[in-house]
Length: 456
Image 1 (cartoon, rainbow, N blue to C red):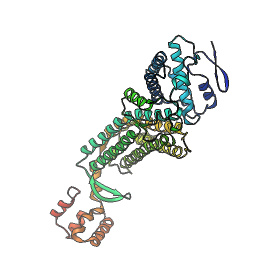
Image 2 (image 1 turned 120 degrees about the vertical axis):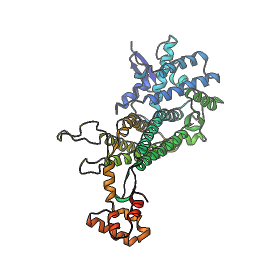
Image 3 (image 1 turned 180 degrees about the vertical axis):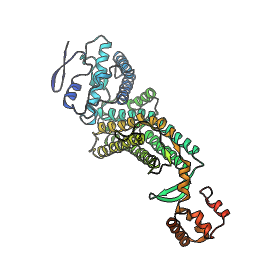
Image 4 (image 1 turned 90 degrees about the vertical axis):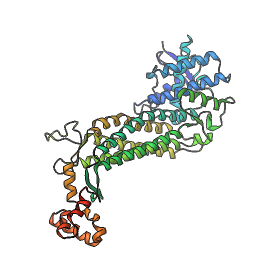
């Protein structure tokens, strides 16, 4: 049967099957914005906070044993995947995550009541505010949950990023003996090995991963225990250190108390910095995707130094055309991640006075970016990078005609003479090596030493 719940605004009828309560129902009606709900990582993180709070409050004699155990049992059910359809608040909601926090509080309270054979809505016995949210405020619980959720999601990304770097490194070894034209300003430059380019991409990804790892570590500093505006009001003595210890034990993370509880509520700089690390990864991955598309361009009128695996037809009108579909998808993911970071940056600087209320949109965009990378990097590694092949003959043919090889002669003949030789080689469509020998600038033996492998 339907039940009626009351809050400060009055009564509201709820279906009996709803574990959420009146405050959640109002939020769902107020914010029918995107249809997107909180990510499982954020739900899990917030429920961990509620479980840790119940355990800490019980240990400090603020919450009686029966109620604490019922709350803990309810949180365990949610952590095991239960009641997932009861978290109904849109990701775009009232500031500070209050709507989502109350959604979690109400679901846990009503399930805890049910476990004690009491009716849903019997909030005098176990209430979402008085018991599940005891010693807490949305102001400290939601930022803490944001940090935890991002850490959870990052722990899935980092192994995939490492695997991609390893795949590029492997290709670097495979192509390590293939000389090719280097290019700067999109113009021919001094030679290098094809493997050098692939190893450099691996190094860039490892560096980006290190920055993400560092920023993830910063998120282990949490705001929990600060309650409203950072004062710790309504929390018993010893609560802050105890809940952090409980939360660390539950999550397996080495969480630490915010160095300044007021700053922890005012500033979302740590989330913004983490988002910045994802933006940096997007910039590197986008650059690499562009390079792969360029090096694989052709097959006749492009560079064609490498070939990417054919994964699908590339045209609805041109039979046999194959496009670099996977790098194109990676590019689009990177564009989105960079856009997400802009939203995070704007939200971070929009905080006012004693609370930044825009954490919901920040964590939504950060978790969205992490999800995009996590969903695609494994596919990109196995279906694209692992299958890249090199065209060593084409690389060598370009290199033989590269006028920039005169730089290797400059120490012997001088810069101006080398420049004239490069110009002459282009005009006569001859290799620098051939022309230098013809002009008597170097012997064939010297040419072999300088140009035989494409390196001095």
